[in-house]
Length: 122
Image (cartoon, rainbow, N blue to C red):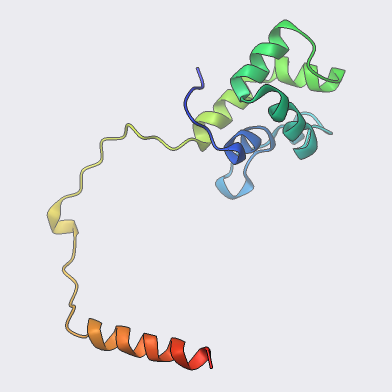
């Protein structure tokens, strides 16, 4: 079940994919199902799960859209899982992995940076 607060961009990427993250969109399976169609459907239904549930019980769009939503529902759900950030991961860092940073010249570095910024604003 897809629940929780979801960013609109995540919903769109579940359908159209995310090339940078290597998540395939539906376009390679259903030509013509792109950003405009995704935006229209998500605006009307609010979430991927609502959209897929609606498509399972009634017609939600043109025949190719309806077919895509019913035939490839697992594709959308998989994309959601791939693109969602996991918040339940138990990550522990060993203290010896963390390096102490020399802070001896921080004041001078910040002062030089501020002087540089001041010079660009003139």
